Image 1: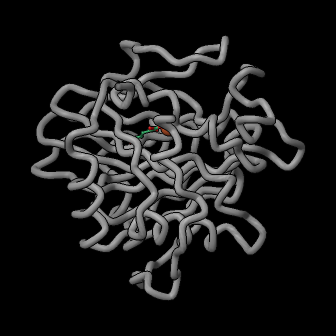
Image 2: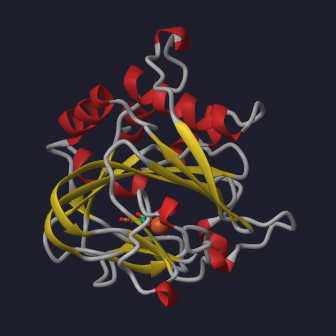
Length: 252
Ligand SMILES: O=C(O)CCC(=O)C(=O)O
Ligand SMILES: [Fe+2]
């Protein structure tokens, strides 16, 4: 019963009490759809999620073809699943509203924080799955969209989010969010600016995974980075299959 404590999908919740920030959006690419969202998280939310997750971080895992997940050298960060409290539901609601009217909370995986110390990284990968066992109907199908939000980046160098296959017009105006010191051939690297988020569409209209969404969490060369993954599945998830993979610490 560890997973039930992570869910509380049906507890009363008053969305009108959410303190929604006046976020600002900018389309970075139309194909694949990539949107930069400045001021997506409030200072209070960033503090809160770090506080509630602080004792829950475990080495991050990567998905395997057999439906399980394992430790890997390609991903050296630590992850923590967030319990759905009111603050986190407000963030979920914001992410759902952003995507349109008909996406229900049941499509969301439990939000996860990911923490990188010096030297830690996540090699190039896609968030969508190839393996059938990772995208069963119980799992809600594939990961339709991703938000990666930055929650903390103290005294950081490195740690950007790099999309090697994306092309963005070369213009000074992008340099506020995009690391313009990176060579042009390396694609687009978003700066880890706390409060900001990058949103993208993983799955094409025809249901196939979009290879151009390949991305990496570049090594943090100094400092600490905490990010937030908000993944929306194609269909509602069976709650029992949500975020179980990092529940080992909950077993009595
Ligand atoms: O750390 C980053 O910048 C990206 C992380 C990421 O892509 C993921 O956790 O799936
Ligand atoms: Fe990712």
